[in-house]
Length: 113
Image (cartoon, rainbow, N blue to C red; front, side):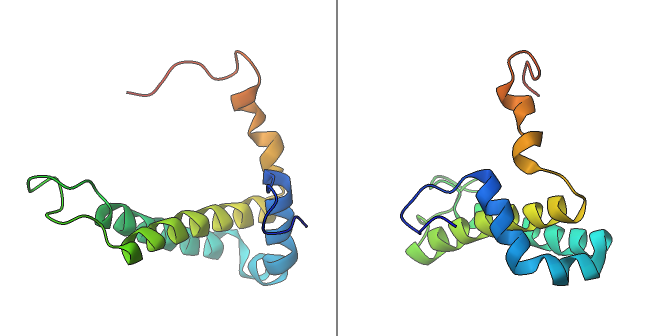
């Protein structure tokens, strides 16, 4: 495993998550793990809401995000990715290989509007 000061590849992160959590998460199964993933997505939604830009209401906060809100936002992004890796592990998906659809020229074009 990479040290905390080196880059972490998608493959290494997926393997780290597998080593730490696979036994428990696979015993819970895909459906139960998906529910926990969605809970984390909800927590990320709240963190994004708490970190929205400063500006006039109702679209924006009246005060800038606190350091704690910013740290929580970063933690929730990490949690969502970790649970997504767990789901990939349970379903036998090589996440790094799956991402090639974005790196192989011509496979994904255009944008959603």
